[in-house]
Length: 76
Image (cartoon, rainbow, N blue to C red):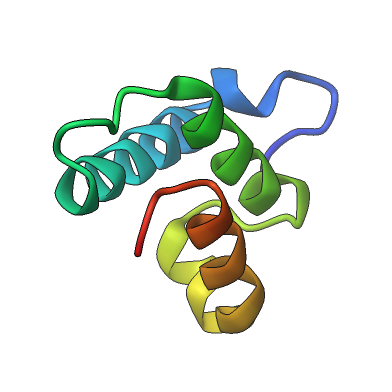
């Protein structure tokens, strides 16, 4: 779990999560994936729930994670 006294996106886990979500967006939406606010919003949802990886979020809360990824145009 990330340290809540620091910005979670500054942590190695947060940076890895942002890269993972961006790669997923690029895979599903190759022509429009560069909308970083959607990537940040989806990753922020995951980090705010105390999960540090996309896989962990999908395991613990698959429906909610898929919903936030779909709503933010990360997956179809």
